[in-house]
Length: 379
Image 1: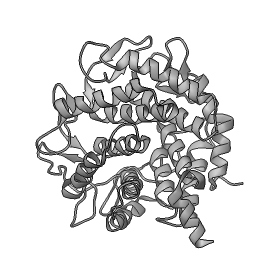
Image 2: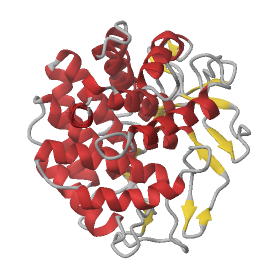
Image 3: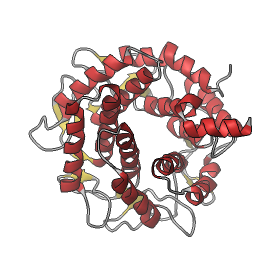
Image 4: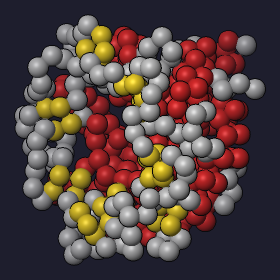
């Protein structure tokens, strides 16, 4: 078994990563997940804890429990969900979910952030799949109503923050909102989300994805005009959109093949000779000299059958292990490296576990009917 196989990563998750982040990565004193660990695996307890990280970790442990990788993850996800609701949901007297809390649950950043709300919805969908509690369904509808009333924008999509709008606008939060809506739709408990999903895909077609150069822009002005000088792109986001559009097509019966092939064109340009995903590239090559774990895992997800070939996906998995995980403490990772492989950060962000877990979940044939069908057709 090699690091290019999903089974290798499942074993690593079961033996090392999920135990580490449920123990050192979870603060039993207040029930929340820590924001990050040191490179030695020790928790950094005083760092403010974003609701986005709480939501991602809830999703991870709920997924691990459903897959049988970590049965204790179900109870952990439910308890962490209770802590997330208590600490972040209207805890400061305002609608929506606060951005960050300190240890003990006090709000330290009260802004309402679209990216964070997308992941809250994803976490709630995961909790609903675990137990189907009506209170979580009610929170989904309350959160969607908040987004519609307070953050929806006449120009399309949603504003970045509330109550004070900020610029630039970004495609990334809308991409993850599509992910959350797909998860909510799949529960069968949260209503039909096809209209909301279609609106986001339409925004992708009209504004996010350039029809002349096949570049997925990152930042926009208030009217959804792409801003910045040279057109640059993040390969990792190209790969994430490939995965999400494929899921959208499976959920709605639509066709996304032309979009995916165009996204792959530049996404593949962002893979270096070691198989790692570069952070930002331009027309003539890399703009930054760094590679990221999360983007490399997203490449492994997007390049697997039925869209790519397993050898491409396996190469990305091998690169992710060799560069980011093998040099770290057991169950940990290095988030960002330069082209020589030198570490560029001095801690391990908890948020990376979401990318690892969702990639392994997607690549496992029994968890991915599209991949299972593709493997059967090539057998």
